[in-house]
Amino acid sequence: MAAWEYLKSAPVRSPSCSYARPASASDWAELTILSAEAPATALSEADLAWSRMSLTCTGAALAIVVGIKCERISNCSLLTSSTMSNDELDRFREQWQQEIRNRTGEPPANQPSSLPTEQPTRRSPIEIYAEAVEREQRGELDAALDLYRRAFRLDPNVDRAYQYHNTTEALQALTLAPVNPSTAQPIHVSATSTHSIRTLISAFPPASELTFLPEDERQPVHIARVPDEVLLHVLRLLDVSSFERFALVCRRARVLTFDPDLWRGIVTSTYVPPQIPTTVPLAEFISRFDNDMRRLYIELPRLRLDGVYIAVCHYVRRGQSENLWVNVDHLVTYHRYLRFFPDGRVLSLLDQNLEPREAVHLITPDLVMKGFFIGTWTLQTSSDDKHHVSISNLTDPSGKFEHSFRMELTLGSKPLGRWNRLTLDSYMSVNSEGTPSTLPIRNERPFWFSKVRSWA
Image (cartoon, rainbow, N blue to C red; front, side, top):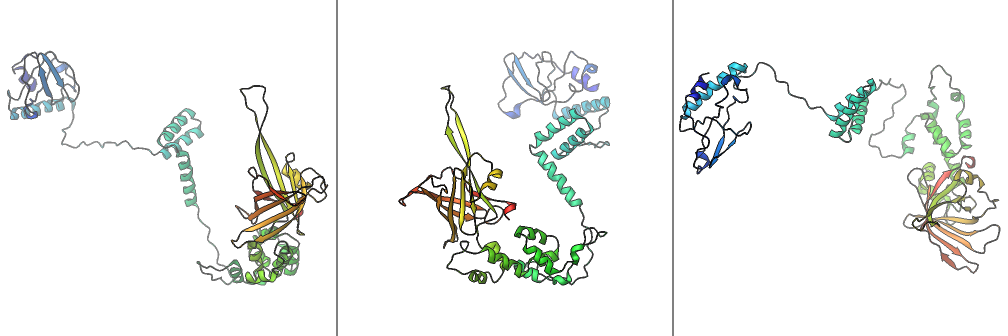
């Protein structure tokens, strides 16, 4: 209470008095304002806080800017620096702060608190999202919805981050079972080997030292008793995709499917004119691939004969409307089919009524249908390593049309499979006199191969 009594004894000045404006910032007076009407016991803790203020007096108005709060004060006691010295102000401030600490029980500012201060931890969006998932699983939908909103507000892609986080943790938790050392002779192959698959397979033990192992040890393996000659004869009766799937079973199956005689029969039956030029013998291609029949079959271009090349095309046709304010457009979809035969014939069908699953089984040389044509095809490779397919003499087998058609296409492989795409480069109509006319191909789309199992 000594500080309060000290202020009461200080001279009081009227707030309406006239003050001269200081010339610089160093001339501002440091003031302490206490209400003259309220007693010391009625003051709040905020009112007792010490504030340093700047004062501007213009005429009878007094503008007071306080760090804690700004308000108009009518009756106040102004204690200027001219009334008391800096030492008296410091001593008065210490007494005042000591009274406040004694009343509120607050430790001094320079004395560290004995209670640990809990810092608010900032949670990541993934943690909030994980808690929302747990709340949703427990049935607390309102709380889960609020947490979902908070998580997406912090990170719009938090759901993907949560999924990636869980997947990463699951993969890290996986451990591989120890592998028993094999009794067979280890295969020493460099990790940076650039050899072909044929070279790697040749490093395997011979097929006689390999065996078929059962997936279930309690079940017998009957195929292990079949001689290799019988297995190779069975593989010759299958198509390429079938015995390649068989090769994925085990190492012995892979070694069996690399038999040179097996692939030689496939190559000699596939690469015949018009798959290859009549002027180039097959032996030249075999020597070019170093007698690797399997690699020759994969890399040497060929037209697929075990299915149909299908192109799905669209165009927009203007329709009629009874309302002048409405324009009606029709999106028309039609299909083009190309089926190639090993003797050089090709069947072409243009249809917009049948689905592909229904039309492919109808494409035979005996078909009588509108839009059906029969022609011939050839395959040639240019100097720029592009494989061109030429289709000529596409005529109507019924003889109703005097015109024939001609197509020029490019054979390619993408994205999956080999030699499964045909891109239409040009489409021409030839009249009875042999004069060609170019037809527009703006609406035409590439042909994609679709295998027909019954033709394999």
